[in-house]
Length: 369
Image 1 (tube, one colour):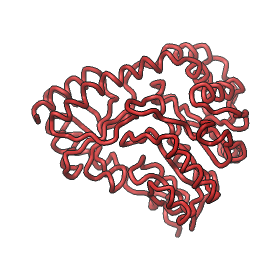
Image 2: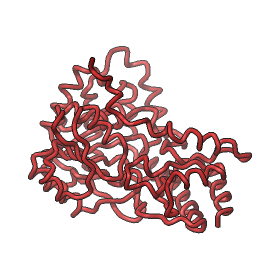
Image 3: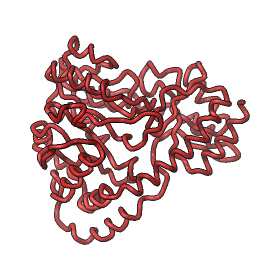
């Protein structure tokens, strides 16, 4: 009898901190949840208006490829914001939130047993999950020189990175492009946090200055979940090598992977508006500016954290001990071992809590100072 697919997968990480969540939630002042990177701020009005205007016009099925207006909006945003020229409609594809794409990309590309998927040593767990779902070999590495030895079919990079917020500069990104091309691998760059950079400037793998205007073998994966506070919409896209994107489209059509029509229309509106992004960036900046020094006063060291929506903090102890200590204060954070063994002495602290909850967390952290 064939083993169930779930047998290939690790325990769901968030289930392992249920006790810490319960302890933190029991605090008399309530829970300060700084663990999950889910937006808590308002959905932009431009999206609300687009959904309302669109809701009655989608009695039929949407297409997997998305509307022409959405494909044009994605291409325009990538060129305007990320320096990616020369993209055609065949080079862009909306997806049902990027987590599903990350999880299924190895399978959609036909990666299988005996082949490798490479991803960062401290990383979003779904990169490894995707490899395991496909029956492929997960290989963590932060060194493009390892590509020639491993010969992976698929390589993931992530900048600004989840969980630790490190940002790859242009030269480092180009080194991964060169290594992937030399090995004949697809390089998928997870750029979902690109709009949130604090101490360095991120680049896209599709930037002409990175790839020379040649998108062969390259995919950029982006989302509106964080950029636009619409994680519940499940609105993202993949763009890059038109031949690879067309292969993804062909398979996804068979599987019925379609972004709902009203969400597609809302995506067009959101991609055409940068003002709400700047407003949200300011919210996160203000929270970061009070939370980081409070953590440092409480004895934490903040590593990396140049971008994204997290602070990568350490007290030079096992991350589970840090989680437990903060839970006593009613503060819930994510243990670094969620993201690989290399993160076992850090915790990830999210900026995605209300101003009031962040201020309360700052007040409680003073008890550790």
